[in-house]
Length: 460
Image (cartoon, rainbow, N blue to C red; front, side):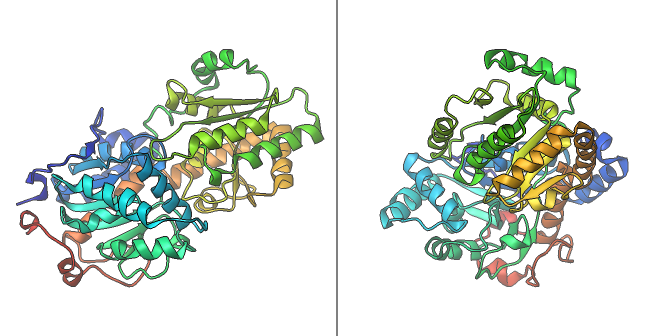
């Protein structure tokens, strides 16, 4: 019996796509040959199950990716699903601590937080829940402990979207048994792999979807039409240059340094007209610190006449794409970053990016060609590159055009889904050759399979 015929009974919140993507829709962006290659890879997998579990339907890069990857998986004939665990404020507070501690922060964490707020919530989600699929991808620390609750059947892989290379030992030692219980783990880049992993490891780079409203390649006139209500509401003159900073409000996003660098450039160069700095960001249900970070940033900005905050705006996706299109430069100088989808989104609109030498940002920006890479706290250098891009529009335009082509070649959605197709082929035994994006020498085997529950309906 195929996994697709098993009843996925679950109390978890489920994603229902508004549409299914025909792979041919991507031909204008990646070419017909790559589309045909994708369809050929998917053909033997028709009806195969691909389930995903995370902690929020909205907000953040994981939800952004799944919202596009699931419809394309369905369009390629997979039984693609996305389940979302439920939690209260205490759960998201402790998993936010997990997130920060996995990225090296030294925080206090209590046994009550671990056993009551975290494991208690996991147990509640596990009640009356059953997921069976050929490949089950558990995203990040929030649902990690679900792999041992005995209700997930199939090949379970942990997908880590953050940098665990130097994790806090306490939280890493707590999570490591759950991760090593999986049939494999997926990382954005080899540099993010944490210590002590004893399972096969793979690399999948996040990608953006050119078919979404956000990534529609706007003309300047189209972009201004989309933004006009916000420009009027916030008293922004579209004839003046705009510096954009788009992300959730998070200590690692380092927005305060962006603000200081912008103010330094303005004070030292005295440009006429002065540019605007527009922070655009949404709050996420699994990030309880976002509101506090936003309030702090607004306090630091004070009554600066050239700084604007656009928060949870209507028609958010189109606003993001339109703002990226008219911005003269985009700044994203995170101190920690899994990948930073916003960088590729800005580059796709032809906007050069000033980004930090952090995480996956390094893979996206070619220094001096498609934008600039900086140390995240180097206010002076960020300010200098703002001057380069704002004071020389021709150079900025050339860099933006090269940035768009770099994204087209490396960071569009079909490539991400292609790698998941390869993993499904490998873990279901349709292909015995290890994926070319494997990061270590460990291979899937029946020994690994025996170590975790497998539902009889998945037997072949």
